[in-house]
Amino acid sequence: MTDLLQDDEYERRFAGVEKIYGDEAFRQYEHSHVMVIGIGGVGSWAVEALARTGIAELTLVDMDVIAASNINRQLPALSSTLGREKIEVMAERCLSINPRIRINVVDDYLTADNVKELLSNPPDVVLDCIDDVKAKLALMLHCRFNKISLIVSGGAGGKLDPLKIRVADLSKTEQDPMLAKLRSQLRSKGICKKPKDKFGITCVYSVDNPFSSAEVCASAGLRCGGYGSAVVVTSSFAMIAVSEVLKKLTSKKVKNSD
Image (cartoon, rainbow, N blue to C red; front, side, top):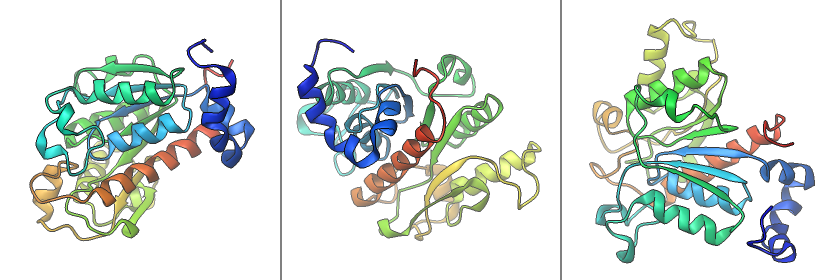
């Protein structure tokens, strides 16, 4: 712990978290490292929720800057932040929420070529909010073969009803062309070829029908500019995903809890 925040003020900030989750769970959050990849309509809200839950260390991965088209759904997007890097704005917010938090910012996009390097120091959980199918596949493969806990966000663009968001293993997702494509690609590589086999990859997705063809949705992923987006949906995806992250953290002994 640092002296950036007096103990009594720190306790007041996070007393509600400790009360609702319990002392043991909160202590694990205080020793946990979560990586969020993709700081957009889902990822930015997820980062906020993780910071406000007292997670000790966050790694934010994105190379994008804030644009006017982000304002309808992305947390850091304001008139005053246009043109700034998303990871920088979110890092500042996190430090204002909790001055004790450790923030790592990676000004890059995850690709098949750099996934090994970006995860060379594996976090306790990775939250995938990437909008590119090839990158998502590379991340799934790396996390699977290296036994890194992974939560994946499906496509949120074109969806209207947050009550139709679901959580399931990748083998059981529905109405999400992007996740279906990823499932097919993993099976083509010999992974979980039987329909009943579970991938061990928790996905957040929506059974709502998007306002575009399956082909458009699969290629667009989380990118919402092509066919519209609702912040009530993108932020709900994030909150549900973070809830799954917290479950992962409390279901195992956190690596750096000594």
